[in-house]
Image (cartoon, rainbow, N blue to C red; front, side):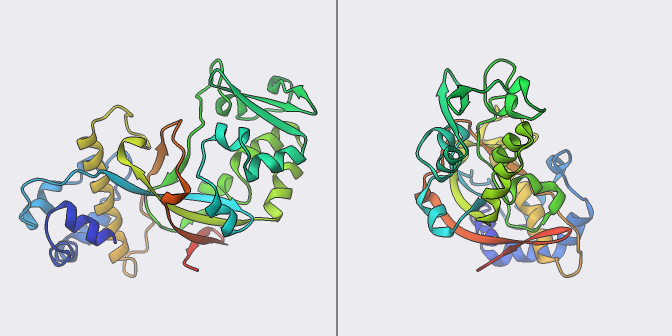
Length: 278
């Protein structure tokens, strides 16, 4: 799929793209591109190789999101939601938290939490990241859905917070010192890796200015894709983990469940988390 996408972007066929990687993949891998150096990847070289005058601009991307759920049917029945929607509407997560005596409302761009009918003052509980997540003064309003750009295995320590139970449950559990809040959910769930479509203007790239233009964003994604493709094609010869950027959706963007295109399982195989095609 990635080969075909690159061929479309460079207005060529897959054979030309594969020939380019046959010649340059190892050189690309040896550069060890990351979020700070990916800008130096030379698009002019592949444009010349494919006889491409101008790259097509990307309009839509596929984002891959870690989602612990009780089963796949439940996963497919709900949108991939921002934190306010997941907590304040009738969802599997809000129903579970209601069993734990929590309820939530969203007012003035802030999530207000109650337990047993009383408003929670997070400052009186143990340290957590809930001030960042729930909005209000000095908050980052970190409501958005995050995911990875590519389907790839992970280093467990890099994604541990997303596995077993949603990160927000771990944060609440830490604040209360009541770890069953996260653990009871995790006991019933499997870790899924969900791929869904997102319009480019609804997505931002990790470590990148959110105000860059569509053309710049598209070219940057092409560079990441070239880097990933080189690693995919030479995986048997060069066993390196490549940089897989986090994609952050806009804070108010909920992914319609109709835009989910594939669901895979995740398997912990320390120190990696493997993506499994069921």
